[in-house]
Length: 228
Image (cartoon, rainbow, N blue to C red; front, side, top):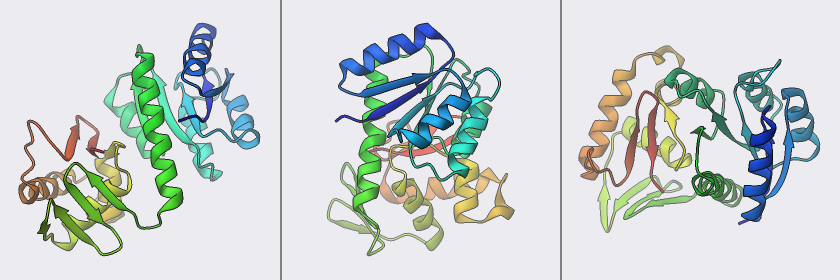
C-alpha cells in the first residue's frame, strides 16, 4: 500500500531517517520543518498522511493540527512526539489526530500505523454506512445490527451509539471527551463515568475480557479503541 506522506519535524536527522525509511516501504515522502510550510504543502500537494511533530518552532504542532482540521483538510494525521504526556495525547486526538506515536519508535511500527490509517481512509471513501468487522464481531451500520459469530446482540440506544462511534473510527484511539460529546452531548463532557459504565455493559454483552480484549481496547488516560 503506497501513499503520500508529509513529514513535519524540525530535526534534520529525523527528516532524513523518515524520508529514507518510509521511501523503502514504497511511500512517496516530502519533508518540511515548520508549521507554515506544513500548511502550504498540505494544501498544495495534498498528502494522504501527515506525520506531525508537536514541538515545532514558532507555530506548534497543536496549532498546525487545528488549522488543518479547520480548513477541512482530510489527510490523516499521526502525531509523532517525544512528549508522552497523556494530556498531550488527549488534546491531539480531540483536535482531530488519527493516531499518536511516541519517539523513539521502530520504522516497522510506524509503517504499520500509516497503512492502518490509509486502510481506514479507503474504507470511509467507499462505504457510507459500512459493515465493520473485528474478529467475529460484526457491526452492520446500515441495519443497526451487531453480531458475534451468528449471535445477534441487543444493545440499548446509548450502548449502540457508543459502539457505532468506535466502529466508525475502528483502529483509532477515541478519547473519553469525544465519546461523551458524540453520544451524550456537550453538557456531559467531563463525566467519564458515563463512558466507563457503558463500555463495561457493552463488554459484558460481547463477553469481552478486559485483561485480554478481543474487541475494545483501553487506551490508558485517553479512552478506547475498537480493534480491527
